[in-house]
Image 1: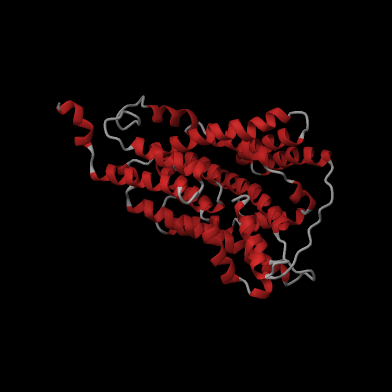
Image 2: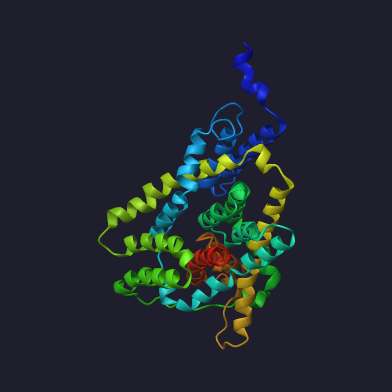
Length: 369
């Protein structure tokens, strides 16, 4: 009889707390619809990971199911790279190609990453752990996982949860930051959007050229940017429609499920419930806020020299949270002026942010290798 209840008797306070956290993530995913495709698998995986005696993770068994998945998909960086193929197949770079000027915002909005790396290093984190924490500000879950896998595997759980949580909280985090840094007059600035047709040849050449440039300038980014652009090339080539749809749907959905539940294997009570974890969550928020602020302030700086002013809110879209950030900024513009349509310029900057975050991750890997 005692053997039947050995799992119940083995539950400790940390495992119980982590099971409650897992339930909380599931609640946020279902009830609040905060990034449900990732938070729900992570939440359920957290429950599985903290079931004592269940033999799902390496703490109990080196051949536990979640440990095997982690070693196969995360330790080898396979799952994040496959996700990038799916993301690339989903993204239409046309708004950016018709407004290449927006690439500047994809670079400027990465300021928070490097600012937070400095802060984390000053707080005593080794530089590679500091880099893994700072990349949370990119609001790009796969890039955060990829860098953390290289530099800070022990911090993978809190870094992943922070990255995807802040992506989901874009509608809550960004508006106060943007309002604080802009005036009502600035938020009412209207922007013209060049909606000219982009030749198919340009759409095909673009992913190839970006891969070559990124791979030569920052070789460590070749895998990240290469898989992203490969997915986009499948989309734009025009002769692989079935593969494009498979990448967007079946591949994206399958790998997302496996990625979420596998990440949770690192969310054990012993490893997660530490002061360091709370600090990582706070630093991730700092990175996210300063990325947003960096893009806004860069737009305000450009307006000093430009005759045709840019709506500074567009700068906030330079993060990688596509397309949530673009929608948030468009709604903020509509709130100030119902006739102010910022969606397409915002999407242009948001797509640039996807490229910028991947390149930033590659630069960090190259500099700290």
